[in-house]
Image (cartoon, rainbow, N blue to C red; front, side, top):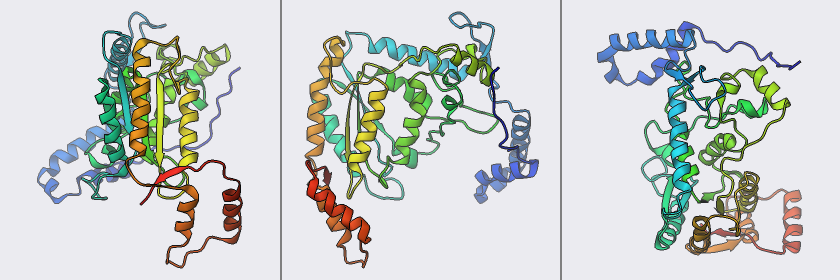
Length: 363
């Protein structure tokens, strides 16, 4: 018997709290002129939430699914169709090679930071090298999540931790109209990943980790590695069915396998090497390739050398210093800040045994 664990408590809002949260979107005094209309919107939204109408627009799954009569969200079916089209284009040898160039910084000169990021500048160097080789470069600038109205990637709900078949490809957790969890960018990004022959990630390191804009996308790509392409096998999000399906044996389809990748990580102090290794391990686990192999397609082989040149060009754009130099500068700034003695000892020991410097851009 499948065990489904419960016990975290009810999270449903009261009518009053629901309205308070929704009305926070209309605090601008200009909205006072349409107060009656807003009240009507709040009433409709409450009924959708109270009845939990997650997917109000559905149609029968149709041929090709385990249960053709099961109702699937129209938005999910449309995203699936775009992914299938992207896959056909990716496998079309008559098309030029395509590289997805991901800029992982959150900074954008049209919002609070007021200046473009070093990552974007490095990315432009890489883009030029890729296009000079006659390849198509699909620039994915994740800083739009901080700078563009309505642009968002909603967080992964970790369905995979319950059971792999519960994690659908593409993700079916969103949109959730009952919860107001809509306008999810991932529905556009999944086809872009599928269409690529190669993926190049250029990113800074934030607090020893990936920037949150990059991590959001990474988490939501979990469905690309083992995700269930047929939600009718679990009848939506039926946990008991998904766990039983996994226990009976799961094929674990690798939806992005065979694409090549490269990673450029930079930082003003430390953590770049840790993040570079983490990103490389993640992409390798999804069976993307560090380098082209003979058995792969001609289109894939044609992008390897340009991506390698793009990496070299982007890392030569700014002056660099070693990690130990960055550490010494960090702790010698005239702010009165000193490294704790145990950290200082560790730094000295690591510097003595360092076999290879990790390069990072100077400030």
